[in-house]
Image (cartoon, rainbow, N blue to C red):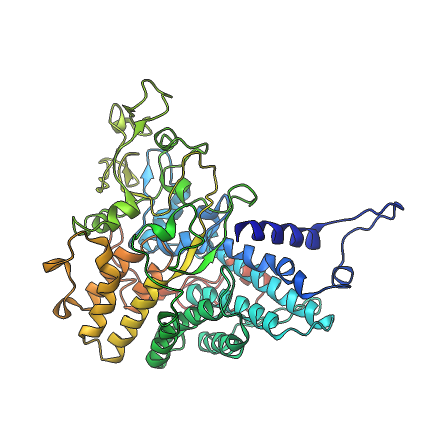
Length: 533
């Protein structure tokens, strides 16, 4: 699958940016759409739509995604399972990370403009292809449906982050055209309509593309958030359950025996992945998958024997790191703590423990040993910690010899979440009263992470309430980009306490419409609570 994606990317790059010279020296500026589609066949479809799927890498990719906006970083940093503390003179960048984590962000912070821009560029690619296929008379209902779902996914991202956004489905808009804001409920209805009208025409199962199963999970997630997104008390619990059952009943999907299996370097064949986003560390360009660089200390390169260096920023908030059961294997398979060693002999004998730089005077002569705790140094104008503190994100395997982008496919949706979504729908449908069926679904996922799953390790009906449900979500799905959505759905995004976040105003359940976009388009309506200038 990764090799195919390389070929598709090469084809689409030729289509979008290429030029050609024939033997008669006739030079063309570019390979235009009419020429490209002149002899277009079904075999050309994967290459033509490759950009649609490489666009999905924007959710977590880019050399400056941590500063300029990517869905994964922005949503996790603003929630309770991920924090980027200032370390000496590093990882402050004008306070943007603290502002996200403490819910004190400014309406012109780059994260919001970046996410908006990435989403609408991806939507425009879908609209372009739909327009081109229609213009050439290429009638393929499955292809059109796949592109409509791909576009609906980006509206799923936008409705989550910003709520009220323009719905744009045309590519050939006149010069000077400016779209108007649509209400969040209307965006919700649009997403549902696009998916429900398309899903029956999709492929049965195609890894890394929008097929019937990945689209069923997308629609289930949309319905799961209906109370927030559509509002007016609208719920679709039966629909969520039915869509989850479509995936549960298919024998091709199942839980892996090892929690780590969906995140290893060659994970594209994992039976747990419902929707994966393909990465390749040789042929992909644009610094696609950098989560490992965001978190590990720069000396980790010599501990893990990699080619790439690291930047040493984000980690687990101490409250969350210390919340795991001591016997829960998910902690060590998601986070790294302990001493780093020089395993290549860069600083001295092979195997010797490494020390901090130090980035801060207080780190001088301290061992470079990651801890669950993140103590703050006194007498600092800005909260500052040591470069060695904090459990580091280690969910995705970092192979020996790793370069600056990982080859692991990013797990957008996985089977464990299907079981959790069904459990949550049943829980909410029953008035938030736990039943044995509900806890059995959670236990099916939970039990693989304990060697001896007996006694108090087993979730009981009496244990399950909103707080415990959120904890179970956290232990299972940390670092996967779902946490902000979960906190908002359970009504605690602005009130829950973590690290330096105490409480915040309810309007921060939505991010601001970027100032730059509103200056360019006065028709865009700002979300409540944010400045209008």
